[in-house]
Length: 161
Image (cartoon, rainbow, N blue to C red; front, side):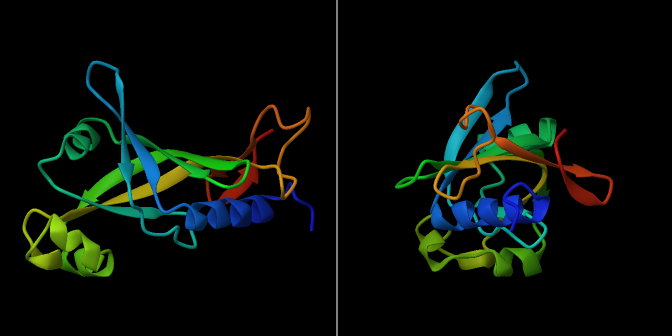
């Protein structure tokens, strides 16, 4: 398989994301400052969407409501591999998604479970995926000094020109 097709690159990206237990969620403060925090994501979904649990009173939710542009960054700890996703985030509080995107370990923060009023979910939808995985030869010339990039263009993923 050609390692530089959108399909293959997204498969590699999903593998890296699934191998990483955590990612950094990066939001923008109204001052223009970027704020990063460690999160335990769900996904990625088939369409590369990522879901995260949060509190509606958190700074990250406040910042997403002000500016929905968000970045997620994943690193594979034992390999020279990473994925950065750039896109938008939406705050959702419907019961179905709160149930679907729940972990029992979250009870430490939300004792009442997914029905807790202080538990919401964030849906992240990427429009750009940047990645590198030296072992799987996803390292564009020259010698992996820049990532492979896939962008969402109208209705499909495409290699960035």
